[in-house]
Length: 490
Image (tube, rainbow, N blue to C red):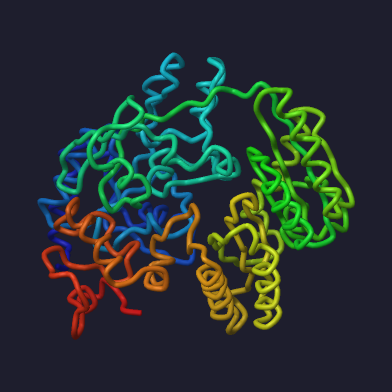
């Protein structure tokens, strides 16, 4: 259904009555602040923005949207890289960034309870005096919020050893797409029955909005040691990564950057990586001191065996931070060497790293589009940065073709189109390349069970959203969502 100006005025009045006039934005210039998330290729100005202060206000916003038949999209800090928080021009953007209280740090239970707007790194800062930290650490951890981490099942550099957000979320209070407040999970390690909590984490805002999250805290390790190894080629660095894992060593992190990514990082943050490196590996080990010492010597030896021409060992926390500064700044840093870029996110088996990286290099040369590679080498999660200049005729199209070809590479090598950034708007067209029609129908039946009216973040994840109540199966003729301009058929 289309939303008229009169309908929006009435909805805006209802929202102001429910949560306060200062928490509802309708001015078009102010609304432009929220026109995209971290993926700026897609921009839509929302009809309204609501900024609830707590769970009940969030539920009131959703109930008002349901009553008006208006779609809504949840947004936290807006750092997502798949267009998952892209607004609807006829909808309400529900921004949870003001719900930012740490409600409890419980070291005896190894738990923390936080609101969705709490910044990822803030949990670690609050838990550290008690001897704990929060393990999932996206590169944007200084600004990304927990609600968004839950929606996208975010990972990070240390997910090789510690897993993704889903491995650290024990409970969620959420507002359902009907406007009800519901709890899934809790403090217990595992709740009986169907794993609805597991379904919710990573559902990209399509099953509701998190308003409170109970997370697992991890004890600070006794010892942390970090090395940076420089190689002439990515093949050598990839071989070293495979050798480390094959030896039975599971580092906290194994990160790789290629020459172009290093160039960008040097231009942005002057991290001082070894000159002339075609690739660098950052390997971090943590745990009991004797175990770390033994494994560290093993890792150093394996890097040398695979032709590392320089190895640096962090002498203290300051030097370790400098190693990580280049890696964690990489996405933003490429802005120093390219006016525009696409951040991609795919997964391949570790053993396929050399072959896939070579093919990415070939694609780059064939299309005249530079690609900087920075990624979680330990678990094969690639983040190719496809560089282009939108002012040059044809470059945007060629960049998008290279970006899509990289995802196809991931699929053909037995991987995935996303490791931690989600599907969102950007990758919905690739879902049929990974899943059959039956697979996609089954997923959407789950979505319909939570959201029968299709109002929660519509148009995301699936290329052609099914209408709840449809009979599963291949449809003939134009899909109603296609006719309404809400979806494309690929």
